[in-house]
Image 1: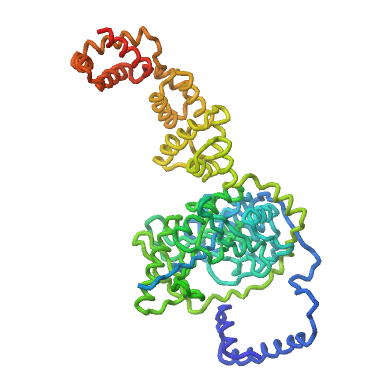
Image 2 (image 1 turned 90 degrees about the vertical axis):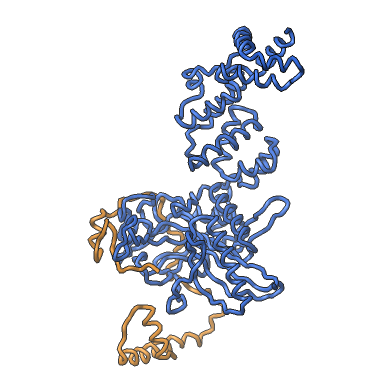
Length: 94
Length: 481
């Protein structure tokens, strides 16, 4: 169902560092889950619309009105490091 | 050398002009102090729910209709997953399957050479934060993030690969920007980042069916820069093909100073955004009636307005084209004409004097220190003979520099035209006395000498004498001699 390589790829996308044992374990577990879900493919869904949402709701809007934001110091309290009222992170320039 | 053809597709992002963000009530105002327009929703705190801004959806549908798109009855949001410090949720709410609009087109070019460029799709999505890598000239040992822009509504307009040259790309962009400005859905100001453009470009041998390997070019900060970057890329790719090098699919950045593109260090894997339907947002349903109501809010578009200017004001193709190329300019023109009904004269003053001065000081029409009413007043003063055409230019200059009314300037600086024949005769006498040589030459049949004499009269009156009267009186006086 799923290869170890695919597990490594997905882990990299999710920025997860896995040990060799974990890779083996998750390959089996994820494979089992996918196989189980795969049972659904046995059903004939020819005439069923794809579902993206389970609620029977649409067009939930808010009006275009400005509401107060958080104070600068409140949001910056979440920053690993602050410089010149900005969040400071590792250099990301290419 | 073999013959190549160029294939270009453009991806344009414009910020919609809403007051608040796409999914929360934070302000979208440009230029606020960093990190002062944020809340738990736009910074991706756990447990919050986004709610769609109705106005943003209406602007998006309005734009889609003006770009001749189909607006499907149902569209959904999707999560585009990637890690980057400007994206606090680690996903961008965008659209993927079932976009807001698709299969439209934009007409570009002049009446004689019209062309349709397909609009493949239009997505409504949220902007990311802004990254700063240096403060002024000071390098920082990290990157700085301002989340004010995070969550501002964006319209992503993706063209089909129908554009055949860098020049055509430029025309496409100016046409698109003009339409969006006419719709009043976006400022489309590249300097403020409210319009951004990435370009996909490839070349292939003429007659070949399959597309060549493309490069995605980014980091251009003006339409001219986009054109130049594309020209550079086309040349680079043809050279590579000619020397049988392999072109790799990659993202390249434009270096404005060196006027070249360079390869962005390619990320270790291809983009895999793992899109999936955004579970926090219910689908958008566009009922026929609502779409038709939005269609009614579309005012005259640039092309229609140009046609009308030609018909209604008897303007040339060219003049009408320039005047309607910017909604603010066309509005300005019509406001002047409303109070001074001489379209040809207004066209000249707007296109030569106004645009000339605005260009020199690098200002937009919206920022013009001279209002349409003030320009109309100036033209009326000229029409009534209170000031001469030459003086009018001086007055305009003063109006532009000070914002004062023309009447005030004319009075303060005593610029009222001299139309009193006695007064002019007196000055003519003086000039004749002082310039016997010119008088003699004229007597010998040198007609041109009169020009010198007229000039002297104008100089003595600082340009205020009515030129027709000066001419008439001078001629009469010289004939008597």
